[in-house]
Amino acid sequence: MSVGPHPNLSRRLGRYRARLIRIAWVGAFGPALALALGFAGFSLVGVLDQLSGLALGGIVLAFWLGFAVLLWRGFRRYRPPGRDAALSRFEAGFETRPFSALTDQPSGHDRVGQALWQAHLARAEAQADRLPDPSLVSDWAKVDPYLLRFSLPVLVLALGLLSGPLASARLHAGLFPDLARVIAPGAVKAQAWIVP
Image 1 (cartoon, rainbow, N blue to C red):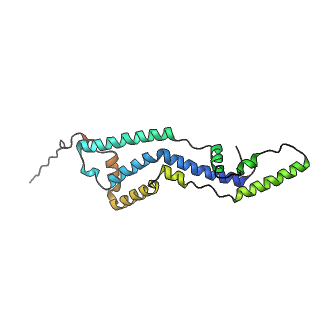
Image 2: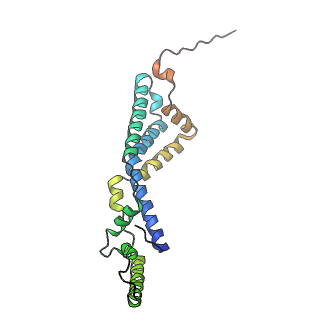
Image 3: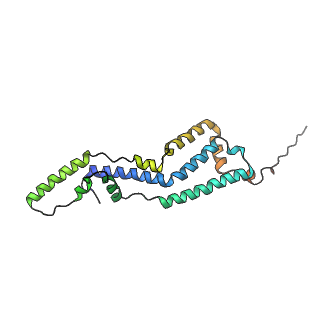
């Protein structure tokens, strides 16, 4: 369903649909993103630097497997709302269905009927312009009840700043650990000779 030649209403509906798409995206991919940011936080504070051998390998393997599963589930769950779904969702909060009234067509084509129809369209458009956009607070509460979409990035950024110059090295070592530390942590030996 389209709101036709009403550019202001079309823009409002487009913005509302974009908000619904963001909610659907966070609902689908939020768990994978939260896991990645949480793992980045552990890397930045140096927890993974203290581990070696099977503990480090197990944690990194569990992260990558968990991330892959959550990402796969996100792709399966992600269904962005279409324009018609956004329109029906927008109008669900109003008795008058203001946008749908703008798409109706008159049954007759006589002069009096056309004049009445144009007056009806003008009233419907004015009413639709005055209506506020429906709130999406309850939708956000369902997909992100703890506001992790805001708190986790801020926390990881703060940890990165606190880590200073070690931040990038710790992130890289956490995501892609040195295989020598994982496979045989005690087998790497260094020899040195001192020549008098």
